[in-house]
Amino acid sequence: MAEAAPEPCDLLLRGAAVVSWEGATPEGADAVAVGDGRVLAVGRADDLARRFAPRATTTLDGGLLAPAFVDAHTHPVFAAERAEEFDLKCRGASYLEVAAAGGGILASVRAVRAAGEDELAARVVRNLRRMQRHGTLTCEAKSGYGLSVADELKSLRALARAADEVGVTVLPTFLGAHAVPEEFRDDPDRYVDVLCEEALPAVVEEGLARAADVFVEEGAFSVAQARRYLERARELGLALRVHADQFHALGGVELAVELGAESVDHLEALTDAGLEALALSRRTFAGLLPVVPHFCAMGRDAPARRLIQAGVPWFVATDFNPGSSYTPSPPEAAHFARRRLGLSAEEALRGVTEHAAASLGLADRGRIAPGAVADLVHLDLPGVASFGYALGENPVRALWRAGRPVPVQP
Image 1 (cartoon, rainbow, N blue to C red):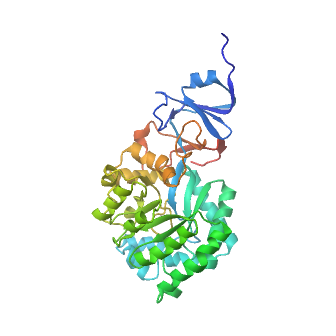
Image 2: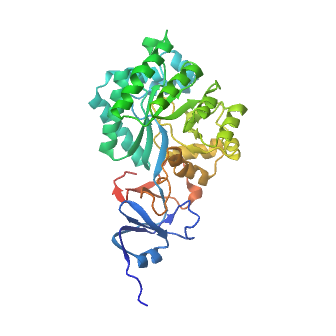
Image 3: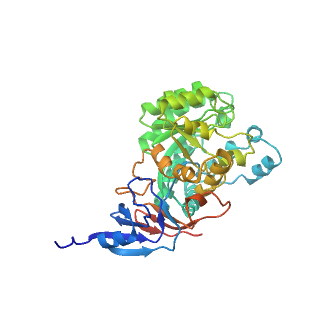
């Protein structure tokens, strides 16, 4: 019987060890066939070369071919850096002390309010391109440095414009409840009224976000205030994500679980009660942001191993922002996840790919398997054990978005 004719495909990538989380992937897989922007098959190069007739073939020079990174917690919509604050932190000032002195989030708010939408969009373009150079093709991205209805809408519009220009898939989150703006310092409940009655409906009406987030912390929002905001967001059809237990355990984790939030992030001050709530939920992801404790010289980290052992779903993210984690690099976040949180190299890689995508409801991202979107990254690493090993280096050598090459710089 004659052999079947080879199937057409758009691209055959070969010559790098394929990192896939699918148990059916053949051992020694070193090739991926791509068609119509999705993975058609994974296997050995010789086998796929017989099975497919590619329109183009790219031969790589070793290394790893992995899913492009999914950064599930970022704040790229800012108009100015805060390097002076970092100097203060290096000399002993805490995150909360800097904020109390008028720095922190409110410093970023002043800069965003002073920027026009065009200027802000141009800055976000630069930030998204930095993220892309470090292997990120999908990210969750928050507003939160405007803290007025007009400036939050401006921020989300600038984010949408930048995402279109750069070609990164952005899942926008409205973080109007990031901090209480200075004009509402004496009446924070009134600001929550504005968020619930004006800001959230305006965001939904313009279709500018898929989720809403709130920072539950001393000096930010109480559990009662967060509940009002999150319940209103859920009523309007937004998904929920929460910052909680970064410095103090106020009940934000338990609230996130109760309301069915997609994730609750930070968790350096997580209590046994919070961990139990997450373990019983098995739905709300624990967002691990290991660069933040390093950047802020914190003496404790999220209890990652206890969370994993308890069966809590989790991911690793950069928390890219100008004040507490000024890095757009998932490989660098992986380094700190390994060193500070005790994750293995494979866990760290899955944390910034498969698990991050799952926390955002993206079943077709973060893995290399038939049917998945062909967002791929070529890493100059000899094996998975080297992921997150080096510090201060970018291992990304090439990127493909939906099977099309994306120019990157080392």
